[in-house]
Length: 444
Image (tube, rainbow, N blue to C red):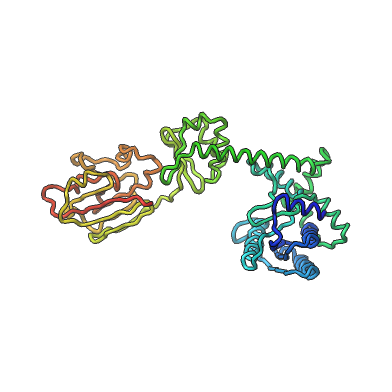
């Protein structure tokens, strides 16, 4: 067992000879065997134990057992007691989720405070099988089929090479004592139900389930690597970055074989699932439709999909006085100036500039998000009123950009749709003596 343990560490390059490893030890047979193997392999390690306070005296006895184990190995020992049930209730979590969050937060704290290189947990091959079955039952992508990985950032699982039966046999061979957690026999937890009921049934079909699964997981791991390579090629070829947006053109997308599954992989970092991607294409691509994830937004716009970070729509109410010089908004910086003289040709150069007649304005002005129902008498239409939404359509503003547009308001009247059009009512003329000048600059 020690040789297989060291071979697994070398194969997956889990540790270097100078690494200090913090072992997560519950007192159960798996973690006790892990301690024994680390000691036999002469690796540098310490023990950390969490008392979750869920089983009364049994929990306290587990903590005492693990502390004694650390003294026997003459290594550093760390322990803590967590109010797991209370934390679960406060956050609306399950007990298992609360326990996981609490223990890993504490392990990482120990890692930083005492300069340990990695955390080691005693997950074994049967845990990996249970994970795959659980993921399949709930629905999963290819990542849910590779089982538990030997390393995930600072967390390592050096016992994944061994089955539960092999661990038990080693513990008995070495006369190792351990603690039994009575909650492991309860089927109210999903993993226990799989362990106690589902896997025994599967082993009736295939008595060599563990060996078969090990080979299958190795194959799936290679398939996953190939998939990620294809997703990376797909992303580089089809994702066109434009400022703070990503454009994905329909022509190239539809001509790519298996484009839906590749797009799902490319969009996964932005919070989209395979089901989300199917919704984009089924029954067919729809112009102007929006697809949301928790962090991002996709809009189907003419010949492409546009991906960008979601910005929570908010009404920005800023009072603008005649001494105001600069206003910073989430998307742009708007510069304001009062001018006594101005070359009127300047105001014709770009839409980002507004030049208004100072005497026609009522201060303070209000800078805010436009709202449905807002109307303006656009410059050049001789006082005819128009909905701001229609004005933005005239400028072909994409639907996902409309919510970000600001207006400058004077005494209830819109004087400027920022970046697009001023109002006829506030235009300068031959009688203008003072100019209220505004210019919008996009933030980098």
